[in-house]
Image (cartoon, rainbow, N blue to C red; front, side, top):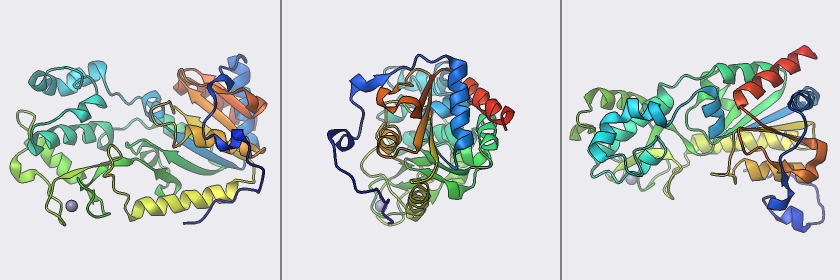
Length: 318
Ligand SMILES: [Zn+2]
């Protein structure tokens, strides 16, 4: 693995911290239109753009997880297992203690299809990629739904750190390989009765014979296969190139569920490199460190709107 070069400098308490002390976080009181213009100017002036995409990006693009969508698509699961604390949306339902593997895959095959494999909410992703077409671009994503790739981004330019809905792995992580399960999930979907799949379809680990699981980082057995390490290497190459150039970090819908992969490291990069700036788009958590001054724009608004407005502003001023 290539090391990312950081200039030698004195380690202060601020640079030691990987997050931002709460007192430094502010909602900027700048007018929305000026924020959009500032963000567009940052992008125009940048040579490199690193997108950090969290769950809020998929939601803004139209992906649904709970509410009416869940009732309509997972009604039979709610009826069988009771709504309780789990059968509320596609996040919590994944943690339901399913009684057997037939029931487990009966549920997960459906979530994989609706949450990723069959999901097509790419117009917003396409619009964003078009606005950034002349930039050196890389996407760091914690989303499992592959919408950026469906929208046309090269797989060489994305690092999905948390796995995806398209692959399965040994449930105990006994070997570092993942298996394409798209066809299997379609077959399970056809064969599902009473929320269960037939026993003959339950996948078994080809090495240890134990149960398989989704290749999602939801427990300590998450498998990082060759493709994962290759993507990590490409990310590291991109950041090593960009770190002393004009780089904009474009953070899209990253909240505080997993702030350690995008949000906090982005803040660390801005703190340690004067020429790096941050655009943080979030529906209600667009707080930014006050100490970043004009090097950060935090737009607290419907992200679908702010992405459109920034993209438009980028084109108008070309
Ligand atoms: Zn195994």
